[in-house]
Image 1 (spheres, rainbow, N blue to C red):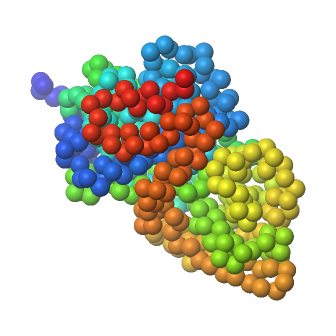
Image 2 (image 1 turned 45 degrees about the vertical axis):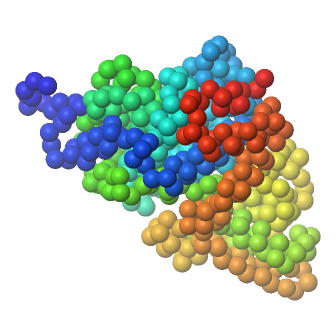
Image 3 (image 1 turned 90 degrees about the horizontal axis):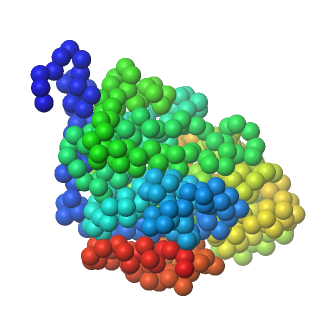
Amino acid sequence: MGALSSVEHILFPRGAAHNDAGLLAKFLTELRYESIPVDVLKHAKLITLDTIGCIVAGTDTPLGEKLLAAYQAGEDTGGCCVPGTRLQLSPSMATKLNAWLSDVLDYEDVAAGHPSATVIPAALAMAEYLKSTPKRFLAGVVAGYEAGLRVHDATQATPDVYRRFAVYHAWHGIAAGAAAMVVSGGSEEQFRSALGHAGANTSLPLWYVQYGRPAHALKANYGQMALGGIDAALCARRDIVGPFAMLSDPERGFAKIIGSDQFEPAQLSADLGEVWRTRESSLKPYPSCAFLHTTIDGVSSLVKEHNIDPENLEKLKIRSFSRITEWFSDKAPASDIDAQLSIEYVSAMALLSVEVGREWYSPSLMRNNRVAELMQRIDVELDPVAEEAFWKHDQYLSTIILHTRDGRSFTTTVEWPPGHWRRPFSMNDVAEKFARNLRGSAIEKNTSHIIKTIMNIDHLNSLDDLYCLLRAE
C-alpha cells in the first residue's frame, strides 16, 4: 500500500479509534473451525438445527405463504434452497427470504436481538453457493455471533434513546456479513470491505410495535439485514472496496448512523478468542417475543402444578418491566404478529395448555371467544424490581399471581425462561421443538435424518446431503 495522504485510507484508517475494528477484522480473517471450542461448535449446530426448523414452520403460516409467493418469480434452477419448499433462489434472495421466514413466528433464538435470523440464512446460502465445507460453514456461524454481538456492545444506546430507535437490531446485517465472509474466506482487505459494506447496507433500526396496529409484518427487517450481509460478502470477495472506516469513525460512523448516543470501540475486540459470545445465544421455547417468555413459563407452571381449570380463573395479574406494560399489553390483537407481541394472548395460550407451536396463531384460535374472554381477565402492572433487572442485567423478570373463583391464589416468579443460556435446552428439547416445527411440512419424513446430519455436520465431506434433505420433492 502506498503512502497515505491526509485523507484516511478507507480500509486501513490510521487513527487509534479504528484499532479495535481492525482487530475484529483480523480475528475474522484468521478464524478457523479448529480454533473454536467444542462446546461452542455444538451450540452452533443446535442454533442451525433450531433456525432451520423455524424457517420450515414459517412457511406454513399465512404470512409465510405470502412471502413465498412474493419471491416465487425469482426462482433460479440450481440456486440455493429455502428449507421445506421446492424454491431455489440466488444466494442473496434465498438469504433474504429465509431470514424473514425464520422470524415469522418469533421462534428463533435470542441474544440482544435474533442473530440466527440473519447469521444462519447468510451462512447457509453462501455455503451452498460456493460449495463450502461443513467446517467452514460452522466457523461462519460462530463468526456471525462473535462479530455481531461485539458490534451490539460497542453501539449500545442509553435507555432514553432506545425508546426512539431500535438500535439493538442494527448490528444483525454485520453479523450476517461476518458469517458469509468466513464461509467464503478471503484476505484481510476483503474482510474489511465486507464489514464496511455490511454496515453501509444496514436498514433502518425501527420499532415495529410503535406505529399502530396491526404491527409491521416484517418486524425488524431481518430479511433486509441478512440481504445486506451476504451482499457485502459477495461484493468483497470480488474486491469491491467497502467503507470499513465508517464502522469506527467517531463522528460519522455506524453508531451515529443507527441513532445510538454511545460508542465504545474497545468492545469491538473485547476478549476475542477468549470469551465466545456464541454461548450467549438462548433458544426459544415459545413462538413469541422473548420478553414474554418468563410470563408464559410462569403461567404454564402454575396451570400444570395446580391443575388449574381456565374456566375457574378469576384474575391473572402479571408484574413485570415497563416494556411489557407499555408495548406488549394488548387484549385484542389484530393479527398473528400482534398476538406474538401480546402478553395477554400468549398467557391465554398457556392457561389453555395449547400445544406450543405455530398452532397458537391459527385463525380459529385468533377468533376464539374463549381466548378473548380469558384475555379480559388478565391485568399487567409495572414491577420496579423487574424494571431495574431489565436495564441492569438484561433480565426479563416476571411475577404471576393467579386467583381462582373458588378463592385460591397461587404465585410464582420466573427469573430466566427455559432455553435461556443460564437455563439451557437439552439436545432432546431442541430435537422435540424441531420435530414440532416440521410436523405437517413437505419434509417431515426427513426429520430424524436432518437432526442427525446437522448434529454430525463437521464429520461430513460436503453439505450436499443436507441441502437434499431440506428440499421438498
